[in-house]
Amino acid sequence: VSKFPLCFLLMCHGLLPPCLKVAAVLEELSKRRGLKTALSNRDEDSLEPILSFTVRYITKPQFSSLLIGVSDILCQVYGRISGQSETIDELFGKLRNQVRDECKVQRSLLRIVGQIDALITVLESKKDEDI
Image 1 (tube, rainbow, N blue to C red):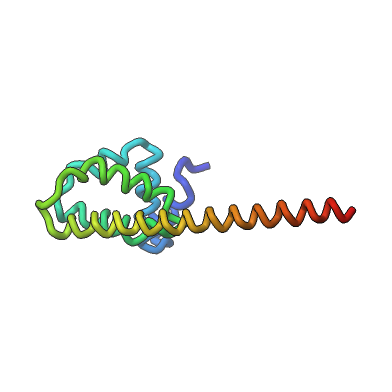
Image 2: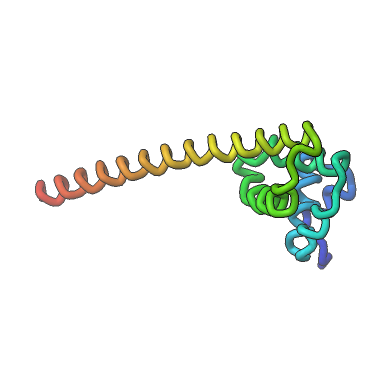
């Protein structure tokens, strides 16, 4: 049995789309506790692709758990550095907007779930009264 995850093996053989390849590498780095090191000490040219990827995919359920951690590290490492690169500042602004919008969606979904739970409770109590 191989010690490499199936996703990593598929990536090595060119059988994954690019977004899954990036996610597989980030996931493996995270498992090996090397994600912060890999994301640190980057210049604008090497930070931009990972920040762009994070902005693009953070709201996708398939990637959100991983990319929330990535964005947290990116904010810790580079959050205090602003005004040095218009491109990076713009991407951090987009990331902030994506996270803000996703939080609004999640709050709305939680309200809906609460309303559904209340309806189910009422219906179950009425069902018990009818018996």
